[in-house]
Amino acid sequence: MKRYFSLLLIICFIFVGCTSSKYIYDANEQIGFSNGNIYQGGTIASDNSNLYFTLLSEDGLFKSDLNGNNKTKIFDGNAKWINVIGDTIYFIGMNDDYYPADNISSIKTDGTAYKVLKQFKNQDNILSDLYAAGNYLYYENYNSTSTIDSIRMMDINGKNDKEIVPNGELKYYYQGNILYRNNNDNKTLHILSLSNNQDFQVTANQADYVNVKDQTIYYFQQGGTLNKAYGQWTGYYNIETVIKNGGYMANISGDNVYYEDNNNYTIHQYNLSSEVDKLLFQSNDSNVTIESIQVINDNIYLYVFENNQHNIYRIDNNGNKSLFDSVPLVS
View 1 (cartoon, rainbow, N blue to C red):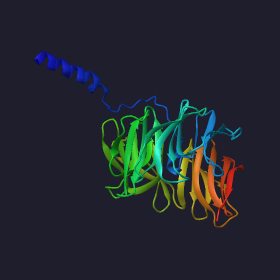
View 2 (cartoon, rainbow, N blue to C red):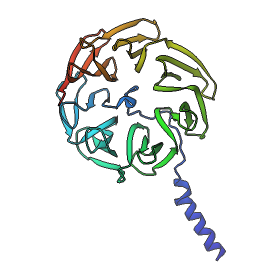
View 3 (cartoon, rainbow, N blue to C red):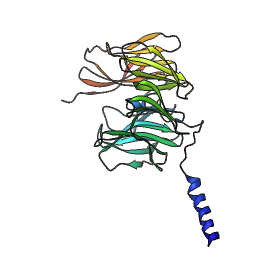
View 4 (cartoon, rainbow, N blue to C red):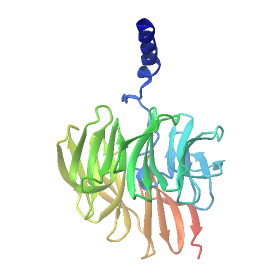
């Protein structure tokens, strides 16, 4: 009997213990998101061959070449927080244009094999900020009844869903680390290492529009300054100011920071190497609202509300602007 019982334990260890979901960071993992797009709605992503995006004028998920030509609808439903890895797109599906966002789904880049990976049937749960990296999906789940945000992760096939931060807001994913606002610590910016579960504070300030470039963390703090935090990812950071005033939302691609100067609601490009600041966009509407700055390579996709309509502009590094999509305000 003892021998039989021991054999059962060994079998259980093989089939259960060895398949435990212990996180192992893969330095060669593929990243599904582009720059800081996810925190600003994640409405466009790229696999360096095509663009995958949503439009203002029509529901659905679309595909085009890198210049925005040959647009094709590949999914009829609403989608946000778009990621693409290999031949698969991952996104959060919604019941209407905004909320509730209640499912995490995937579809092939040719529009086939649509699959719901995770469905939340409780309408109190609102999903956002999906990051696909390697073999995992990371996302934020807001419970509208308890008004508590939590950060969760699951395998990229939708299995082994679990909570990793009980009361935090997901800001960014970077190389096996979760950057998040800790709601139990005055909403300050923290890093959680998924490999060893170490958690530490980056800055005592509240941080938004978090990006990471070459181990350096960039973020806007209250008051409109863009700061950078650099160190050894061990809990100690040097903090320096990059843009001193007037900044609000930001996104980074290469050496360029794209940000809104909310003193006059203009969009600027700031080069981190040359420290040259260049105006890229200024509206003729004094009541303009900047809604999102999405970046793909050297082009920004700027979502604005101006002159009683919602516009998406495609703007290159020289400030050349073309209208990507537009829809008038419905009264």
